[in-house]
Image 1 (cartoon, helix red, strand yellow):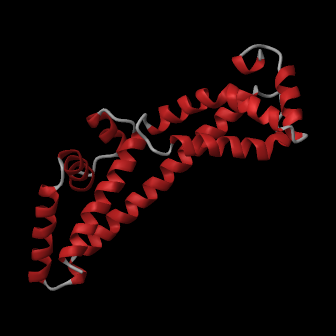
Image 2 (cartoon, one colour; image 1 turned 90 degrees about the vertical axis):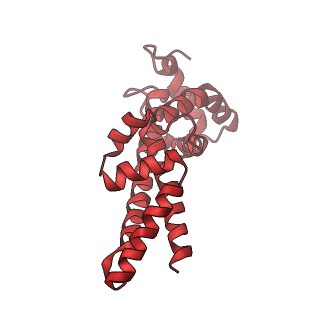
Image 3 (tube, rainbow, N blue to C red; image 1 turned 90 degrees about the horizontal axis):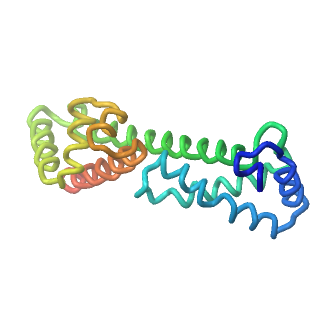
Length: 189
């Protein structure tokens, strides 16, 4: 397909889109086969090659595209460009969701170790337990948590420091903070 490969005419894209809108499942399969690898590559760039959500993002992209196909305008963009925008939007939505989860976990962790939960003696005991639990964490987690929480480094700075994509920083940090929170809940139910 000329247009999907970045060519000039979008006539082929328009025909394929019309077939999909008409309910032609073979056309849906054709589009999927043409673009799945390219969309997977896009999601990998944004989320990182080890991210377990890449396949979900790609499938969500196809689901959204099929649902919105009647609104596709071949004169404005090729099917690939149009679907790539949907994929990028889905990636950013996933990153924002992870960020909210991480922030929520951070707030809960701070509240769990904070002074409003206990008297001064118990507060020191909690902080000591928090330090001990952080020291017992495996190095990738300990370094991420230390730099994010204690040093207040941004996700971008962490991605650069650890040489991993920002999406991977978000997902790893979320898992590490959840583990730390769970350990603290075991010590202080």
